[in-house]
Length: 219
Image (tube, one colour):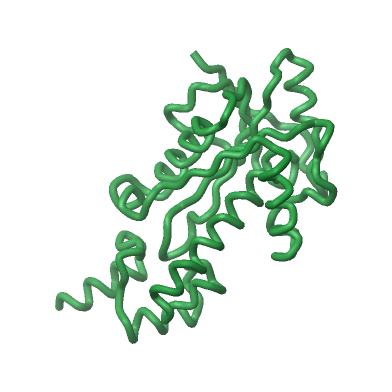
């Protein structure tokens, strides 16, 4: 049975480091994976998760929380990670978000990501304060983990870049919502597109703005 712990540590670090991974290695674990998700808040598109096992001797320079990096720098580190780390990417679909809820769907994506690694990890560092149901790997949770752990920061970059690129592709099929720049979030352009062109199959119908539009169409 997998063991779970809440990893606390300092909350004052401005940039992530490898200390939590080093502590796990010192405890006898050998493959430490960082897990993070992106895309809980958008009105459209899947929720994405990434699992990344870094090579302790070959960590990309400038690795940081994805939100602290420019798009150009995220793209560059993303390419390096795909070459030099063990990376797995997974999602939970809009249908699964509707069937469960966004939190559960994000956890489903996380479990799929860690299960997709080429070589299984034996310890997971997870962004947040909950271990996903069904995760069979010993794990620790880290609130704001993408600012504290390099492995989680790497996962945040991979998940964000992959999802952003997916939304750019979807925007070519549905050009009226600005997904190429807003990644499905509820920006002014996106909401104007909803008013003028309606709801697509990629919209999350259980989310209030979409639900309200569909409800208004019925009355």
